[in-house]
Amino acid sequence: MSTSTEPTRTTSSTWPLAVLLTSVLLLAGCFAAPQDSAAPPSSGARTTGSGAPPSSDHSTPSTGASTTLVDPTAAGTSSVPARVAASFRTLDAGLDAEVAVVVVSGSRTLTFGVPMTGPAWSTIKAPLAIAAIGHGGGAVSGLVRRALTASDNAAAEDLWTSLGTPTQAAAAVTAVLAQSGDTTTSVQSARIRTGFTAFGQTRWPLAAQARFARQLPCITGSASVIAAMREIEPGQQWGLAGTGTVAAKGGWGPDPDGKYLVRQIALVSDAAGTFGVALAARPRDGSFSSGTATLSALAQWVLANRAAFDGPTCQRSAAASSHRDTLHAQTPATSAIGTTP
Image (cartoon, rainbow, N blue to C red; front, side, top):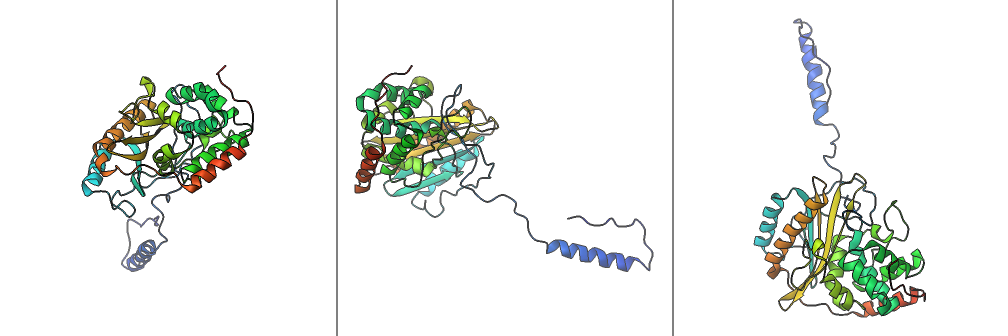
């Protein structure tokens, strides 16, 4: 609030008027319209997500929207034990990054950290691989393996091309997402950022990613994809990748300002129980290496608290079968591509 400068000296005849004017200005300031201290949460909150540090593969330009912390003990996550919520707050306080963890177990969706959405980056290669298998079968097995275990962008582009036109390919991958119960995410068909693939720029929310991971075993054609996600190359074994029987796919890429956000989806499933998880980290220094280190810290926390997350395995629904039929109806009968140039 700006006020007029008071004179350094006054006379006895003018000072009451000065005091009165000053009081009026102060009162006006007290009743002025309040200003927001921060922008409201937005579905376009800034994030990024997957590829490879030398060559990431897909992203949407950041909107620069601010984010809001989520209280793990708030409504919708009330089933989380207090000790788990407290342990996350302790972990989060020691991390130099904005982070998010979403766990889907049975009918529960548990959210921790900063709500993020943004480009899927290479995490989208998992549903892309399933769509390509549904169309090309074993002929695309080599491409699927390279796209998932090594996050090979050229292999992923060949899988995409094998599905027909960009519009047809996007519809096929969207149909795979629908099998997991995600009927809101629409796979991007056009290149909206120079130097990055179209499909990687899909806006794929963390909750939808975690649900997809949890439902993976019940999605048609996912068996070989899960197997490949359990054999991630050593250089990409951060986060939950390479841990026991965990099936994971990471993704990473820079915002337009060059700062990285690193993402990962994972299916944790063994005799102890099953759940899907989505991790995201945007380190304050903006580096890929800091992002992967942060995801590994988040992964350790998830595994240390998995007793609170374990649930039943998925059950194939009638809706999933319907979306499977849609996938086959929308995928063109073009010849499959078996090798990378």
